[in-house]
Length: 258
Image 1 (tube, rainbow, N blue to C red):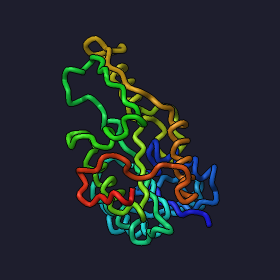
Image 2: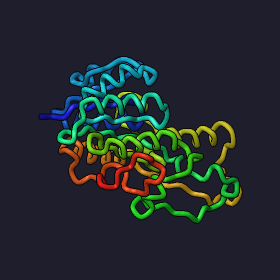
Image 3: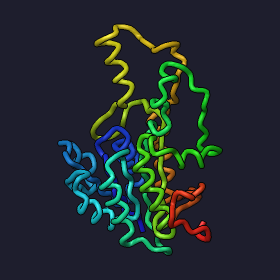
């Protein structure tokens, strides 16, 4: 049976591109999207995609819709009540024999060095590795951006790992033309260009200009999403779901389950 998918942010830059890829590559999937505003061409472009009208404050609606889904794809780094609604809804019907899946978009700001003024314009020698540094990446201090949402998802993975499989995709800066029905540009690149065109009139840098960040093309990021959704549709596939790090910060952790 084809999986049922509930996706939020379907008119955003990343969410819209993921939606377009899912519809194109897996027309058999049963897809529902949460939209506050529906673009004029959305229905004609995606006639088989179901629309639920609402926003992240409609937590009861989100939980009810999530309860009917096998997979939730959440395209938002913030808003605690709605992430909890997604989790509560998925847990209604998730079982050990038929777990539900939550794929959440994280924010690159989680590991940004914005809080340390000594790195403004200067190179930070730290280079993160998403395999070897996984324990540190999933145990960031509470001062890290978006950490409040990550802790909610991680706690759900620990408390309900037999019924709810969770994954967080935390990309670096994203560039390239979007493929979805709404926003087609990244947030950062146009921001930089606007600053150059409207204010500085030239390319600029701060201090020595040694600081740097990584970038990924939208198509490559979407490919990761598709692979993860396909794994979820296969009951988990070869993907590594949940929390596999130190857990002294989670009181309900059960060592035997991991």
